[in-house]
Length: 206
Image 1 (cartoon, one colour):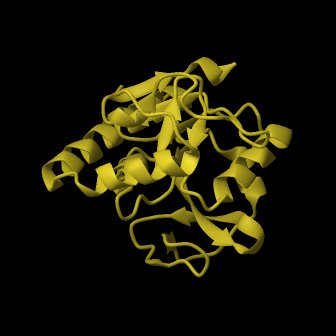
Image 2: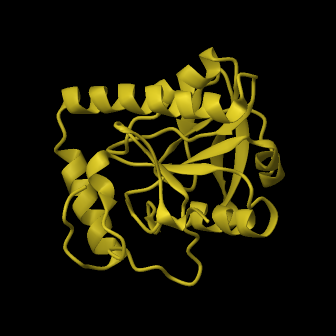
């Protein structure tokens, strides 16, 4: 955990994106392995050794790489749901398998699975969610990518599916001291983070 200058969410987001862009290929590859190993182990512990369903996302650009995690979950026999951006900052979900192609989103700078789409209610059957972030503090406050899709999706969770475990995927250096991220009225604290070093439960997990 590193010290982080106090600033707006956009300041912190920009700082972390700049740092991410300077990471070497070896560092990113090592991070991918750690995220996959710890994420799949966490998923297995939640599933109790039986096949389950997990919502993940494809990390693109300077985001922490999640494709190895997606592949590991599939190899372990789990069903994997990946998001698709829809109008109104809503997400739909597609079941992923290795033969599913990725295409550029119409609404966000991300790659999305090309397949039959399911509404947000399909997430209600998930055992856990892996969500994107650019930083999280120890109180569970999260800075997303700026598009607002997951803020809206997490709002749905508040009203319907509070019980579903979730972890924000970040690099180790992006876990900040409590209070470094200003929480707004619409923000939902995340209960855990997944980093290359492992899964950590946060103070906001009540």
